[in-house]
Image (cartoon, rainbow, N blue to C red; front, side, top):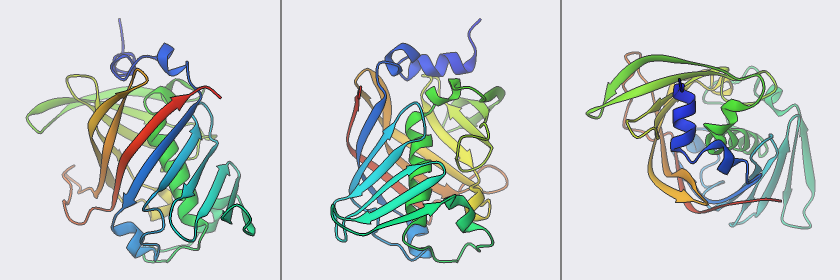
Amino acid sequence: MSTLLDEVIAAHGGIDQWNNFDHIKAHLKVAGHIWEIKGKAGLLSDGFFEANTHKQLSGYCSLLPPYLISTWSPPRLTLKKGDNGRKEVLLNPRRSFDGEKLETQWNDLQPHYFSNYAWWTYFTAPFNFTLPGYTTRELDPWQQAGETWRRLEVTFPDYIETHNAVQIFYYGPDGLLRRHDYAPDILQSVPSSQYVSDFKQVDGLMVPFTRRIYLRNADGSFNLDPVMVSIDVLELEFSKK
């Protein structure tokens, strides 16, 4: 008997197709209220995200001044300005958020750490759930938007850096992701819901090109305003490096 994880992996293109690739490159437009809170509005508004799809190794290259380029692989984040800019290094970047409040403004390196690990989580799901150490279980179904959504609780292993250890993914009747709930540790565990849409088939894999993240209420509903983070994919490709 197939499990919910088996079904959603098949719906998103299948593990065999996923394993044909080990690299993703995405042109992203990113905005939202969180960047204003953190004093970094516009920092990630237009650029390219690239990542290894099977391990946490990624980077971001801004297309706008000051042309910041980040590279991240636990436990090290590097940031430089342009091809010849001075390189800054942050070891164990997650520790840099210790003691912060939600209104604490970020330094130049922190938003790159937050975005690199978050985007890696988003763009590798649900296939990353098959990596060693992940555990999953199906929860009771959820009614929303006139559909019944099946829910998968995912516990991430310690070696994976992500928002928080236990997250919930909601899948529609077609097996595709509809919603993703989490509470980022580095944002004071604020309950958040990400809604995805505009799925497109890219190299045989189904990928949502629109993501909107909202604050989540105790009853599971969400606040439409403000949009905490918006992510729009302009182009995306998978490859074998």
